[in-house]
Image (cartoon, rainbow over all chains, first blue to last red; front, side, top):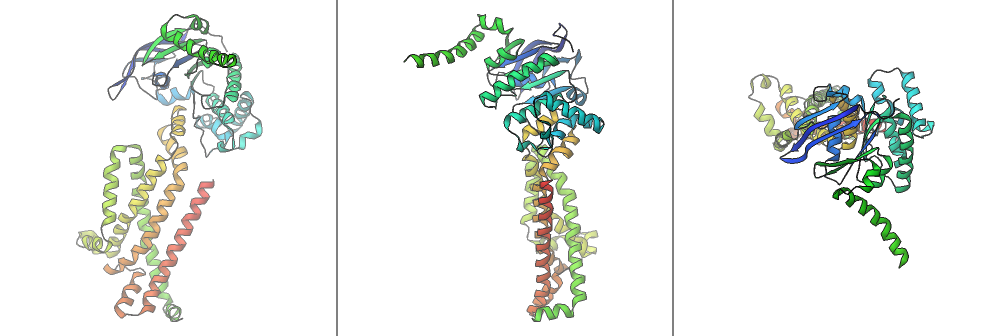
Length: 258
Length: 210
């Protein structure tokens, strides 16, 4: 596995997306480098989820071009493309009628891996995401929210994709579990060096996990900054986030004083 | 018990008509499934067909059964043999619950599950057969269950056009003003409905658990 380099794995070139005459995204130009974690930060409706879905073509651009590994993804075989990209969403979306093992092993299975190889991969992944091996036989409804999301991550990694798309994966978890999963994810990413696009509205999460933060507002990319640059940025939108973030801490301190 | 004595005396005919009845219900249900399930899948995935399909099925449901049998009688190939006609009419009546429940079952699958599946690179048919249908199967079966129970009752009317089945006894009994004869048709029909209800219900539970 390589450390972050300067090869763009995902490129957005003048991408616009309209639906029912509503401009969801306009003039998006962005590159995601190999091995980095690019966080798309923005409010709801800013177009960050749409941007993510353009990568695995759950959404097709109205104009412009999205390239994955140098190839325009409107020309690629969409099924092949999606199987080479891990996808994790907030609602997890585990198949409720499959055990944990079948959930994780589904893509390898339809890709024609042998039973032994799938089994080995599943137990390797369970260990990787910090789940006990005996959970393999459980059904999703028998798991806690945190466990479910771990299975979601394991499932996304199953067929060894180079790219991971994560749409607010930890957003529905309680703060302690979220903290734990963020921490483990950053450790995991240090080992795996996947190219990750991570959607969140939480600046804290963005600062913690991102190598770069792409700030979006009203369908436009405002700026792309490293976490350090972000905290010192004088961009009005970026500083608004930082201010709101610090206000949270200040208001607690104010309460302490009174 | 006069009724039981009557049924025992005419047991070959009771068995024969029960089998005929089962034939009418069975064939029409199979046809209704073959048409209704694909239609239900279609309108679940293509919402613009939703209104016309459900409206048509609803309208069919409102036609009184005796009238429907009558309407179909002059149709060339159908009118030749009354059992064809009866099967067609029963098929039409069974469509609504099957279409509606297929639609409801598929629409009831958690959108996040479908999106995750699509995002993982399942093809549309893998998504349908491995995710949507297994998750919707108990709702679809409960539609089939309703259809079968309705059909068992409706099929008694098929005797009015000479298609046979347990309705023969019922109509004959009405003409003769003989309760025993009516009941000789009605009791097996009621039992058939109960057995079918129980049987499909059992299947529903088993598949839902697996």
